[in-house]
Length: 354
Image 1 (cartoon, helix red, strand yellow):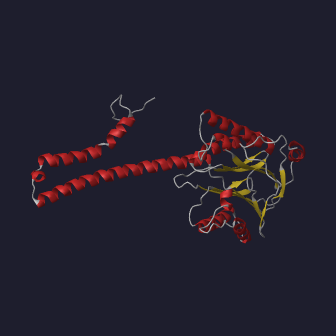
Image 2 (spheres, helix red, strand yellow):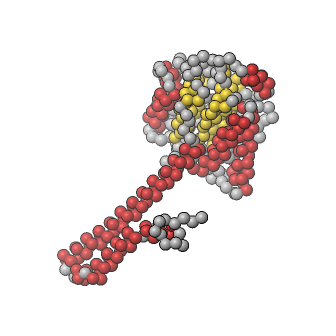
Image 3 (cartoon, one colour):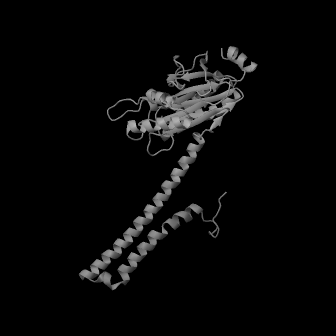
C-alpha cells in the first residue's frame, strides 16, 4: 500500500516528491543566474567592474549548487551507513556480556574499508545442552561474503537449540551451506572474490561447554582457539580438523574432540585466521600467541582486557586496518565451582556423539 505524506497531493508517489524537492534548490539557484543574465544591466556591460560582479554572481550560484549536492550526498552516505550498521546488528549481533556464568566479549574488523560487515561470523548462546559457540570464516571478505555467513549463522542459531549433539548441529550447518550453494549456482552468482559459487567454502569451529566446564569441539578447517590459564596461551586441541563446509561432504562419523575442562578463571580465545596472518610493513606475521601469553599474565584477565590488548597490538603491528577480516570471540569461566554433571549430559557424551 502506498502511503502519502501529510499535505501531499493524492496520487503522487512519495519518491517522486522527494526527487522533486531535491531539485528545488538547484533550480532556484539556476533561476537566479538566468534572471541576473536577462534582467540585470551589469550582465550586459563590458566594463571590467561589471564583469567582476557577473563572475562573482556566477561563482556564488555554482558554489550554492555544489554545497547542496554535497549535503545531499552526505545524507545518503549516512543513511547507507545506518543500514550497514543495522545489517551488522542482525548478522553479527553483539553477544551478551554473560552467558550461563561465562563472561563474553567479541570484536569484528572488516578488511573492506567501505563495509561494516564481512565474511567472518560468530555467536554464543545458552542452550539446554550447554553453552554453544560458533566462529567461522567465509572464503573472501567484504559485502559479497555476507550472504554465505548469514546462511550458516542463521542455521546455527536454530540448530544450537534443537540438536542434542554437536554432530547434529554441524549436519544442519552442512545442509544449510549446501542449499545456499545450490541457490547461488541456480542464480549464476559468483563467490565473494569473483570465483564460481562451487568454489565457495566456510571454515567453522563449534564449541560446547558443559555446566562442569568440560569442553567439546568440532572443527571444520578453522584455527583452534587458545586457552589462557594465567601462565600462558596454549591451543585448545591439536587434532586434525575436518574439511571446510562447501568443499567436500563431511564423513559419516563426526566424533567430537574432548578438550578438557575450562576451570574457573580460564579464558578461551576464538579467532579467525585474519588475526594470525596479519603482516607488518616487512611482511612479518602478527605474533598472536605471544600477545595472548602476555595478556594471560595480566590479572584480573577479563575478556574486555584481553580484547583491548590484542586489538591494540594488532593495529600497531599492521600499521592500520588488517588486510583480511578479523573476528575474536573471548569466553571466560566465571563460575565459582563446577557443578555435578547431569546424568543426561554424561550419557550424551558417552554414546550420542559416537
